[in-house]
Length: 219
Length: 253
Ligand SMILES: Nc1ncnc2c1ncn2[C@@H]1O[C@H](COP(=O)(O)OP(=O)(O)O)[C@@H](O)[C@H]1O
Ligand SMILES: [Mg+2]
Image (cartoon, each protein chain N blue to C red):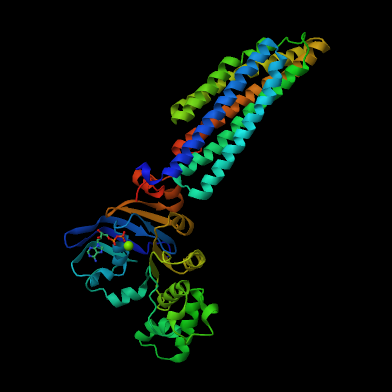
């Protein structure tokens, strides 16, 4: 059957491969970001800022490819959903990658002695890395159940975030100005992690739409 | 009346000798809407619309079974007057087929056959039909020239005007733009969207984009069966049947 539209299928396949590459770039960036936080490696911070360009270029490329496929093939039904969700997921991935740049800038700006909250920050590593890897797999295999499962895991991230917020509020109330200042500087970092989890949930919703045509709110 | 279906088709089966062209079709066609019929060649689209004004009566060997109601009236009943049916249900074909006579006489042909002789009345009918078919401005100064001198797109709009001059309720169109260039096609498409306010339109098309653009409802036929019927937006975004999906995405056909 596929022989009837070889060029169209080829273009869709290329789009998917570009998406999977983009997932890989973001997963790598996140992994390196946590490594940077643990080791306070400022060279790695520079590298992360540089590497984010590749993600931006990739998003651009996906947008251009999608535009041309729509232009040339006038896609309908599942073909159209495939293209639209690629564009939307690429946008979420780009936003997730942006957080690695912000965290890298944070590391570049902080002194050696101000590393009080690194352990707390690195607590987000297991759930977020797990979510990112699994959401890529859900996209690759069009596994809706897995996508919904991943969005459930965002509760763990939200719980960590709530806990940390309470903690920082307590510090701001009771501790010295220096302590409060460091807590304030650290707060955006964990906020980024919480947002990254939300973007993964968005991606899960796009995967559900891709499969079922339904706009379903997850988490 | 207004929201009652224009056609109700029950258990329609059509055969040509041994060939089963349509099998057990059930469908209601909505009033003041454009209904597109899609499906690969030979799936029975033309057979289906020919049933709606009993053009199949003219084909030897063609046997029609089942019930077709125009409004509340079973229009395949032997008591039903075929001439009055064809007046209520006009038809436009794939290839523009103007009669070899003047533009005026083409449009006046039907009304004249019905016995209208008064020149002023005929002039009004012709002008009105040409206006509705968005052709009047282009031909008003040469109504007495041969229709065969018109461009393909103009000829097709003339055929639409000729059908409209009979004041039908339904307009059947069998691939009306497949022989036309893009501009002429666009004019016909705009015309169809205008006309649905006054008429119910059923159009056969091989262009998925055309069906998506201009129709409100779409029926997908495959091998003589109605596979799926529903709102066009749904058919082209989330078809229920895999065969529909495969056809509209160009995986077969
Ligand atoms: N006049 C006819 N005599 C015999 N068989 C016919 C005639 N018209 C159509 N058929 C057959 O009926 C089936 C449906 O044809 P048709 O209604 O023309 O399909 P479509 O318009 O979708 O291409 C086909 O198998 C075709 O060969
Ligand atoms: Mg046909």
